[in-house]
Image (cartoon, rainbow, N blue to C red; front, side, top):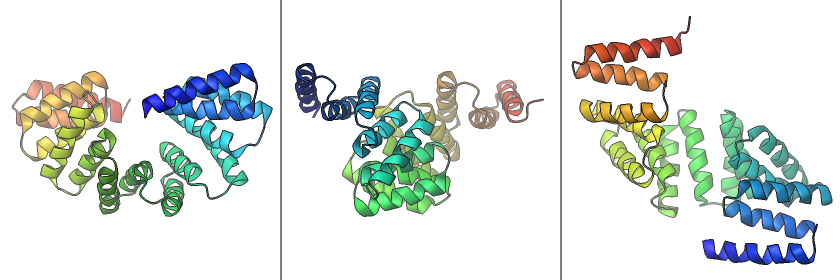
Length: 260
């Protein structure tokens, strides 16, 4: 697939040389760059295309997706809202907007968009993964688990799916199933602080205090000063009879949670 996108990019580059400032070429090249994770290059092409042909729904929804990839969530939402007005009920727009609303903590709005996207385009792994995270945030653990199971069938061995499913199984008290998923996620994407923290909590539940402590120490190096991790770390170190370090972690957590 990478070779196909690379070939498309070469053709579109040539077209842009022969006929510069063509909005069709620019927005299509931007979409290819998006697929190749060249978000900055994609954004530059989309901004030019939007000047040449304002209010084009394709340009706006792709730019919204690119801004989301660049963590510019408010700008992404503005573009996706405009695209939805111009071309309502587009699955790509809805799933992108739902994911952006998730990042902005508008979980109910995110769920509404992702549900619509799922009706229009069932069995899309991206939609299912994003909706599962939203359902997790809304305490619908069973619904989240079902979406993640479907996503895993559609796109096996996806690290995001596995770490999310591990976290959801933990909330459903399926600690062994959670550990299996988190172990797989850690192999596919080592050194992810979320995975390590979640796995540590599971290991704590399974009385593997040493393993939990090791995961929390690694997570603390990657993302220091996480109050949740420090509280768990303090509890784990207490179970390992390492009271001085346990107290140190709990004191740090206390300062982060209740600053003077």
